Each structure stands twice: as structure tokens, then as C-alpha cells.
Image 1 (tube, each protein chain N blue to C red):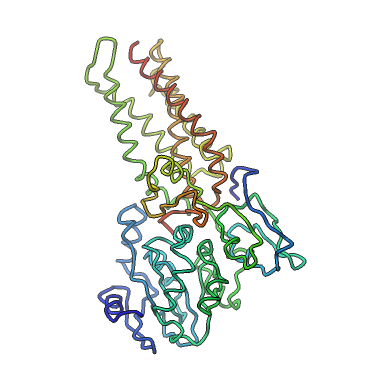
Image 2: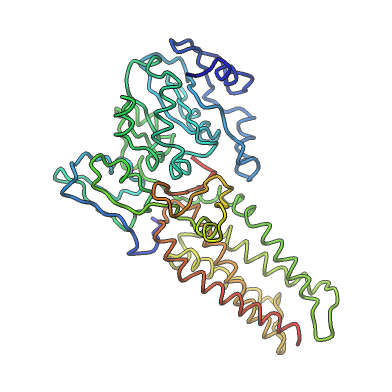
Length: 109
Length: 356
């Protein structure tokens, strides 16, 4: 399994608020969560790619993550005031909180 | 409400539409589950980077097989490649496909932007009159759409329950027979050799203008010497080779050898490959190393090739399935200044070498 830089992930789970619905487990593409003792738990934080799916689908807002486009090109384009080169489609501004990940941009799935 | 014109334009002269199904909400075009040569040609073109941005289909409802009011509803993006991947895997299944308007972008990227999102799904449920077509109140949304869709919001505002389906359409039959439940394997995103290889043509194409410009620049700059300027011949061509090789290393070879290259940062992986290539070129004599001029030249390429490969490899972060925004920011904080310093140093040495 490919791993990226360590100790950077911004994912946070508030176990108090969690109602154990398991939605985060269902949407996570990297197996970061597990429901144990009727509460969600982060079992593999380093695998998180900050796509934001868990936070958006958590019905009780127990998850916080700074999601955005994890794409160097988008960041460079943003810095020089242009739209993302990812063929102008992904167009993700890395600052936008509701925008997320550009995996395999425009080419697959 | 969907207009008659929109319904007609969806049925009109598409090689993959095989008929239509009558429903209380109007006629729904029926689609093939087998891809024909036109579909395949389209896929090939998209993978080669041609017409990638104009490969969309009309949003709306489509039928697969002979669906009834009890059949499942699959939600898809209006990027034709996404749609093709889905219908190809629905062979033998009776169902509905609700194509939402993602501006011709695939599910994951569109979800990241929010165009594959809560609002569009709710809007499309209304405009297709889905509630009149099916008895149940469930829609199957691809899991990679989840970064743009709040399932509980959709439920609250449309009464339809979002069930997240597998990452890969290929797992849909198994997902259905398991009672619409995904296994942990179905939820996991991979980045296998095959997944990475299909991205290479687009990567190469994306960098080709820059590689070409740099190659031309180096070719003509080779003509500079202490005696003034003379149009370079073979010697200019020799200076083009390391540039091109460094671009290929960063944009094509890093994706291929990704898991086996040292370091976690993509720029480090690119730098390593660039350095290996530079060393190979020096040892094979393709980079001159004789006398002061040669030594300067060798030093220059030992810096420039890793810098170019590191930069191009770093930009592959947007295509990977595992790099986080926080990680990319951290990588760029050390990699970009390093690339600039090394490139400037390398370029200075290279220009200096012209005068020896």
C-alpha cells in the first residue's frame, strides 16, 4: 500500500458526538475508520487522503478534516492566479473547504 | 420537468441506445451493456488525451435491460467514460441509470468539486420524475461520489435514501447479491500498476509543450561560446537528450515505478530517477565530461536532470489516489525552493560551461 508523508493528516473524530452509524466506514476509500463498541474509531489515520467524504456524510458532524485538492499543479496554478491546469475541469481551488480530491483527474472511474 | 426535446435528444442517434422503455414519467432510452467499437474508440481517444474535455452525455434517466418500478437506480456522472464503465458491468441486470450533470467530469473529480453533489442529485431526482418511475426510495451512488454528497441531506430533502455502492463498477453484481452491502475490499481505492499506466499518456501530453520548449531553448543556447554565437548542430542535439529524458523520467517512469522508488514525497522519487539517468548519461559519454567545460557540463546536468524530474513528478500528486492536501502542501514547502535553487545553480553551471 502506497503511503504519503507522515504526521500531516488533519482528520479529527469527536467520539463523544459520534452515534456509531458507520457512514464514515462506508464512504472512506482507505479504510481509515472502524466501528467498535458502537462508536467509530480511527484505526489508520496515516492512510487518510483528506477527501472529506466522511465529514460530509457524518449526520452528527463528529468528523473534522481540512479537505481540498491534493494536487501540486492546482496549488501552483492557484498561487499564480490561474485556474487549475487539470484541464480547467477539476478547477479545484485548494482553499475551498467543500472541494476535495482530484484523484485520477478527468480520466477514470 | 424534463422537456420533450431533451428526451428526444437523448434518444436521438446514439449508437449505444438500443430502444426505449415506457414509464409513467415518459419514455426512457434503453442502453446497451456491451460497448461497441465507437465506445471503445472514444475510450482510447480519452486515454490518449484527445477530446478528454468534451466526452459527455445528456443527463437524465436511462434504462438497462427491462427494468420495472422495483428495479434499482444507479447514479452516474455524465462523463461518458464513467457511464460506459457502469453500463458494461450491468450486463444481465435490470435497472435504471440516473445520469447527473457533472459537466462531463468523472465521479471522483466532480465530487471533489461538488458538481457530483447533493444539490444536483436532488435536482435530477425531481427533473427525471424518478419518484414516478420507481416504487422504492433508494438510489445507489458510487462511493467515490461521497466527497460531494451528503447522504442524510439527500434523504431529508428528496426522501430518497443514498446507498453507497462499490468503488469499482465491476463489483456491482456482487454488491447486489450481498443485499446492497459493500465489503471492505469493494470500498478500498487501489493504485495498481495498471491504474497508474493508463494515466501516463495524458501525463506525457500535459508536459510535452514544456519539454519541447525547454529542448528548443537548450538546443539554441548550445550555440553560445567565447567566440560569439554559432548555430549548433549535433552538439545542440546532444544537449536536448537530457532535457527530454528528465521529463520522461518524471512524468512516465515515476508513475510506473512509484512503489519502488525511495522516499514518500513524489519529488524525491522524481529526483532519484533524474539523478540515476544523469549518472547513466555521464558514464555512457552522452554528457561530455572531459576538461573543465565537460566537468561543468556534467555537474550542470547532475543538478538539472533531478530538478526537472522532481518537478514533473511532484505534479503527479493530482493524479494519485492517496496524496492528501496537507501532505502536498508540506512536500511543496521543501521541494519547490529546493527545485528552484538546484535548477538555477545547474543552469548557471551549464551556461558557464559554454565558455570553456
